[in-house]
Length: 259
Ligand SMILES: Cc1cc2nc3c(=O)[nH]c(=O)nc-3n(C[C@H](O)[C@H](O)[C@H](O)COP(=O)(O)O)c2cc1C
Image (cartoon, rainbow, N blue to C red; front, side, top):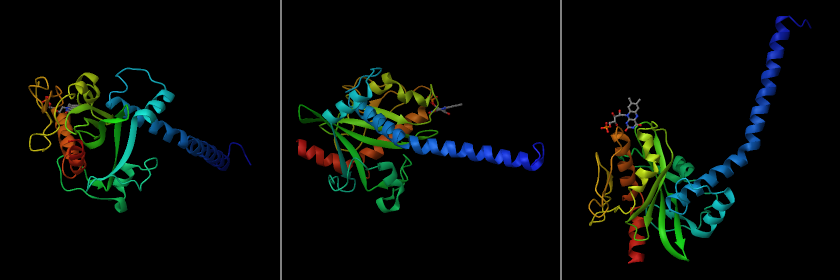
């Protein structure tokens, strides 16, 4: 075959494409397990951080994260509709985001300002223990910001009301504007606020402007300058997950057990 002929060029290009695609797909398959392990490690790191067991900026190795998680965190599956634990589902393999997409394990969510479209039947929560006793409850939260769906965690005290932390591990808001939801100084403003009002309705919200300290403004968190819409999204999604379609029934049970 002529090396400068058209057929040779086409066959050569096809061969290069074939080899490259085998290499790319092979690498992707080989790295799949490692990617999954890294994702699990990242979630564990986020849970420890929202629970205050890793401080902002603190360098913690993968082994330390795994050890601290195993020591202090008890993952539990909750049936959202009743608020009861379901020990028949394995926490190690449960993927709440996948469950929410599967019609067999989820249902359409009632229309809501957080724009949560589907509700999983079950959710994965984390009990944070200290010296063997319950200290905090970490809840997964998600909902629309301005540009993207925000995924994160909200940590409540064992009283199921006082906020101990909030974090977002995935979003695509604008850095410097809505992206300030990642700013440790802003996240710290949530600590000590009350999630619910006196009638146990979700009450905490991001306001426009500055809120006072938690004793004066128990339900208000400073707005993010130039990012009112992302702030509104955070209010909406926190309200949704604290409410009757989210963790409301579960938190009511936690309160009655704790009191
Ligand atoms: C390029 C660009 C990116 C923006 N990104 C965000 C954002 O991530 N979150 C947000 O709430 N507002 C964002 N805004 C601003 C909103 O359009 C809106 O003006 C703002 O939320 C109002 O907040 P303020 O009342 O505090 O000014 C962006 C605006 C521009 C032009």
